[in-house]
Structure formats: C-alpha cells, structure tokens
Image (cartoon, rainbow, N blue to C red; front, side, top):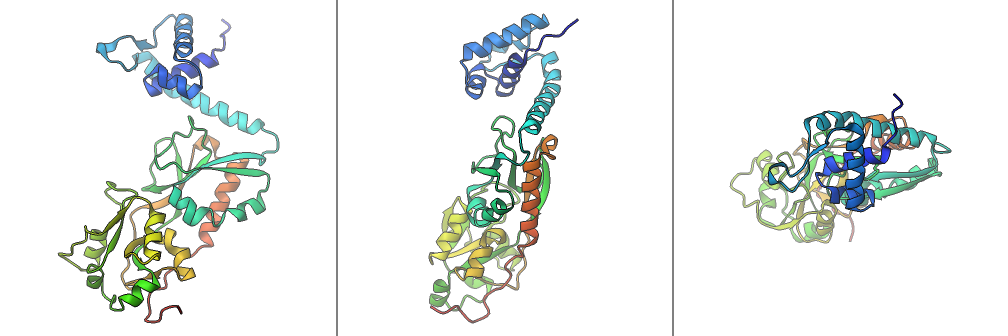
Length: 318
C-alpha cells in the first residue's frame, strides 16, 4: 500500500505531544490552535486510531495514548534527520547563518572579544547569538550549537568539554589600595562580598561559603553582601570597587590581564566541579558550519591559558 506523506500533520502531532497543548503547539508552528487540531484529527483518521486521550481524567493538558507515546522517539529522530538533510542541501556548506546559544555573561566576557577571529576564517558564516538564560530546545528554536556551563550531561545533546574553571576572589586595584591588609582569607570576610547568583540553587555551583571552608575559614558571615544574578555584572561591580567578588577564571581572565581586577589569595586552589561544554545534536555534528565553529572554539580554548597571577604586593600604577 502506498503511504501518503502527512508531514505537517506529523509536525502538529509531535509539537502537541511535546507541549501537551494544541495552543502551545500552534504558537510554535505559527498557525491557529484550530489548524493544529484539524491536522491531528486528519492524522488520526488516516491511522484509524486516536493519538490523544480526550478529556483524560478531566485534565486540561493533552495526554498521548500508549501507542502514540511509543512512536514519538522515532518521529523526533526522523525530524532531526530531515533538518540535517536540509542543512546539507544548503548551497555553499559554510555559507549562511549559524545560531549559537550561550549565556549573556559568557557572550560578554569570553565569546564576543574573540568572535572576530572566527569571522576572519569563516567570512561566509553569519553568527546569530541566542543569549537565553534558560536551556533552550535545540529543535524547536533551531539552535545549531551552544556553550553550556554544568556537569556535561544534557539529554539529547553531545557535550564536548571546552574549558575547566578555577574559582578565586578578586577586587579592583583601587579597592586593594583602600584596604591594603587583604592578605589572608579571613581578612576577606570582613569586607563587602559580592555573590554570583547566576546559577543559584545548583548544588555544585561554587559559593563564598565553599571557598572560605576550603581556605580554612570557619564561622564567617559569608552569606552577607551584594547578590547579583549575572556573572559579568559580578565582575563589573568588583572592577568598580564595590567589594570582593568570587570570580570564575574563564570570565575574569581578561580583566585580570588588563589590570582591571586583582586576584587575591593566589596560593589557594579551588577547582570548580562545573565546566564549559560545547553542545549540539549528534545528528548535526558533521554539518560544515557547525564543525568549523566547534573546531574554532576548541582552538581558542587551547590558546587561552588561565590568568593565574595574583597580588604580589605591587599594584598597577594609578
């Protein structure tokens, strides 16, 4: 029997199942909820079986049938293959738009200062940055590649380690001049501490409490101070002399090299259990633009040693 192709109906079904809502699926597909519902009914008529339990237990959300739930992984894999195939058909291979998802802080402190070097080797690729604070759906939002901070495990994505990270306190040269006795970890707790809340609630995200414990300081009032939910803004506050920040080495490197920030207590090593990873869908790994950008990120990481210099008793000139 010749099988008719119901690609739009399949897309409507998959999106409705993922969102558990015709309305949310319609918003993603840029059609009306009624159109999504009609496409799903058309597919159900052709199959001769329902795909959703209607009014399941009085719940407003859509609930897929057992048969439909079993079919979804294959459908999603098929859509991923289609997307990959279409990418391969695009003329030029490296020409076009590459959509990259990164945090706003990583974009500001690491990626954007270096992106000109990527454009120099790949002038035909236009980079579009998605700086969403939350993890995005690579398929629904058409993301090609990204950099994420975490433990290296994200369902459905390949994760290649990009950068490890050290955690250490920093302040501005001006702040250090006003407070020249910042020599020991216990001294730091007597001043304004700037807290990074960009991943507040993540069990492995380093905090002032954890750093001070590693430094052998107990009973310090480490929870007090200024709290900011953006890592780049944390460093900016420290550079402006507002206190002592617990810096992440990947973010702080350029500021330390330029002299805008000074590393304190350099004899204490505190490695973060989290790291930066390049993430992408495995079926897209060999797309020319993606592969070129991935190689460039790794080259930049290997060419970028951590800034390890710390306060040695001599401050930069005023």
